Structure formats: structure tokens, C-alpha cells
Image 1 (cartoon, rainbow, N blue to C red):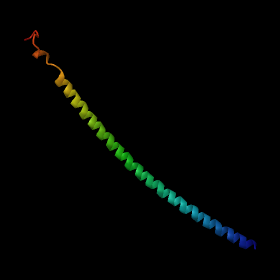
Image 2: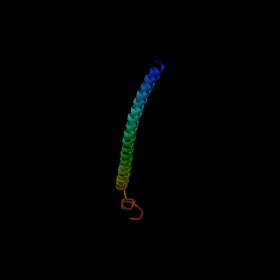
Image 3: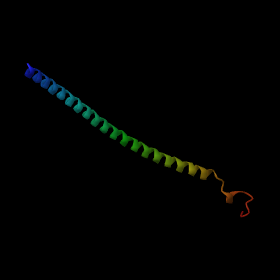
Image 4: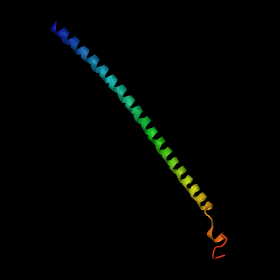
Length: 83
């Protein structure tokens, strides 16, 4: 009878070991998927930041050009001492 209990216990431990191993495999697959997804998201965020930086630079250049165009030319002002 003691041999039967040992055999049952070993069989149950083998089943539990297999179950735990399968669950760890699924968890590992999920983590690998999340790692790939995070890498893609980070890549997209880097590209977005680069695009926003470029747009910000373009806008700053446009604003500077508008500011330069709005400033009166002192030499063209009537009554200027060089006229």
C-alpha cells in the first residue's frame, strides 16, 4: 500500500510539474510579446518626437521670419537723419 501511495504522489507531482512548466511557458510568451510591443511603441514615440522637433523648428523659423518682416526698416523711415 505504501508503494501505491508513493506512485500516486509521484504521478501527481509529475502532473503539477508539467502544469507549472506550461504556465511558465505561456507567461514567457506573453512577456516576449509585451517586450516586442513596447519596442514598437518606443520606436513610434521616438519618431513622433523627431517629427514634433522638426515641426517646432519650422514654426520657430516662420515666426522669426514674420517678426523680421513686421519690423520697420529704420532707413526707410521719413525724417531719418540719413535720408
